[in-house]
Image (cartoon, rainbow, N blue to C red; front, side, top):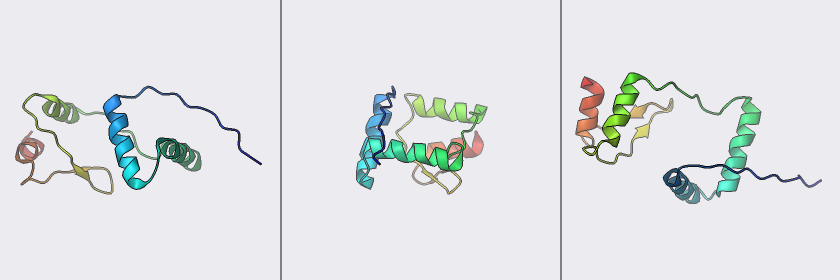
Length: 101
């Protein structure tokens, strides 16, 4: 039996879409497949497949730093729990902010 298909229409930030699409392409996955996988994971886990978090004052300050004209563009790694890992040698000002506030 063939599954009946349905469309999903969403509005998303253009840059987010472009960056995600590029990363998905490197994984050999198109947008439709990725969204299908996301929805199936929601069904399997009966929840979002990640833990949304409340933005804290510290996170707000970090966002402000990154969005300011003084901030450079950063690509940060995360550990298995989703926490940022900041290389103090590559991102001196960001590391200083994370440690000293």
